Image 1 (cartoon, rainbow, N blue to C red):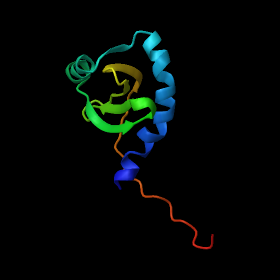
Image 2: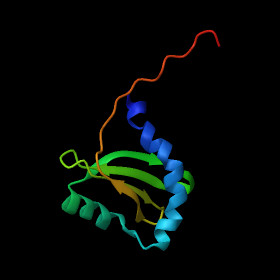
Image 3: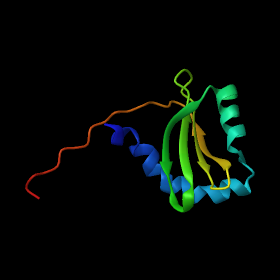
Image 4: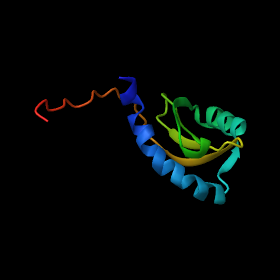
Length: 104
């Protein structure tokens, strides 16, 4: 069940990590503690999932259970956190894996 909760964020990790350099160029980056504080204070978001990417990058999903807002961030090894994507209608899912065909 835990694997399913992380399936979407982990699947997005490749896209997120590819977008991190572009986000950095758009100046959507700041020290991690500042980003987390702003997400909490302005949007009521807390960390919902985390995953390790290539080259020591960390992908995190922050969301608010009250408002449904969400933000995906990537933190580089030097401590800079970049905003990669954000939106509304965040939901926590616990989907089961589909049954595998035993004839294979």
